[in-house]
Length: 184
Length: 184
DNA sequence: ACATATGTAGACCAATCGGTCCAATGAGGC
DNA sequence: GCCTCATTGGACCGATTGGTCTACATATGT
Image (tube, rainbow over all chains, first blue to last red; front, side, top):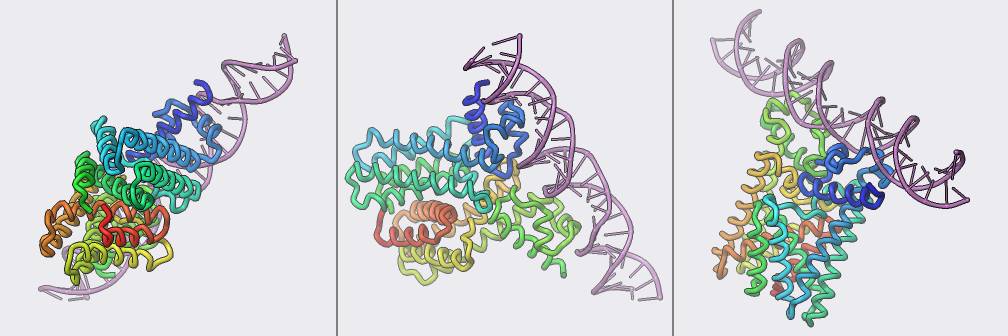
């Protein structure tokens, strides 16, 4: 396996497992077994160990979701329309496997309180999401684009939590409907 | 220490630690040390071990938050007013200590995927919250009370996540303002 | 052909994990 | 005084934790 492949394999595997059991719920051995790699590779690519791997996984997953949302907004002509599309695309993506997975960033958040590296990574991703949404809001001539972006971010977060807890895409679809109906 | 005291001490201590580090991030030894109790007591009161303790802690914390929100709604004359009060009361409660703590139910959620006892407890609490809010919505003659309750629940969840990530009560206060301004 | 650098492979470590088990304690009924 | 039963105290267990260290494979440049 070539070097860059090993790195990205570790990141993807770690991210997937963190989403299922949370940062502290996954051991290095489990990650390495699933990735089919020895411990030496991990500590070669991530000398900082588990926290550094998790920070990289958080940023990688964060960028992936941001790209997904941005794609949803591409065809939209209003901010509301884009927001609805984002909710539905996210719902569909989550429903592609039998188990609804948690937000990869959230799944790592509760371990961030005593891991500065993770704290930084999470805040960076969240900030980037809000800014990305605000950019779309401005592009679509939304009044108060920053407030609208922030509000949407929060609702997506909340709906995803509920979707994960209930193991159903319904909360996200319901959010899309609410946005369409203009429910505050 | 009398029997009921021991039980509630364990629940409170566990809930507090789970909020900081998540279910998997806290060991039984840490809980017992903080509680000043031996292992025998834990397995006497919670024969099911850590999962059973966590389920009890989730329900206890869930009821506590539900009571807080209900109190916020008591003086309200509109659903929006009650929602604003709930956001602000929650923000104030979280700001009473230097560190903004996570939602106790959320802090246990990511461990629920392979722990049926926890899965049940979390779903029970979330359902109870939504129903409680819906009751207030009906009392205050909100049109579509169920939808309004669900929407508020989701926004509170999301805002709390952001508040925890940013270690600031601002997201919750901002949500209160949005509700007042009628931003969708 | 040889030296060097880049990764991989995995044995090994102390510390901690959740859990089990039983002896000691102490209050209440008789 | 004694018996009983609820509860506490804590030693102990095998498994797993994150992390370290060294030996080895492979590729590349000369």
